[in-house]
Length: 128
Image 1 (cartoon, rainbow, N blue to C red):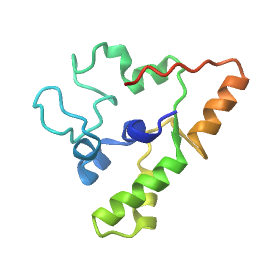
Image 2: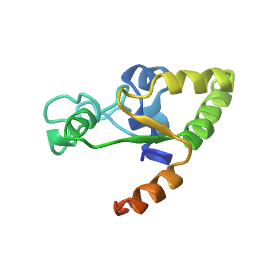
Image 3: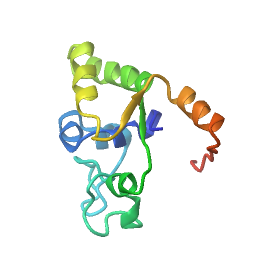
């Protein structure tokens, strides 16, 4: 489940460029060291990730399911709309339309993790 700072990984390249996700979320292009203007985890360049199999599209081929937290989409799209002097509903609709193929928008990331745990999945936070 992609939520909070992982949320931009749920979006197509075009949204990364348009909304400057790399700059806002401090995600940098490995080659240029500049803020990323494309999703580095979706159809990455060879060698861009620690392992090529870490790519979202490759994981999906192996049956991994991804969800994007709707609450995070709503909150962050509102922040971006305000910062860019745009309409919040318009930005949110743009983001929903730009969710990667095969990903599901879930009402709440926390709820989705809890539901997955009820079905035998486990949760391991490995962040810092």
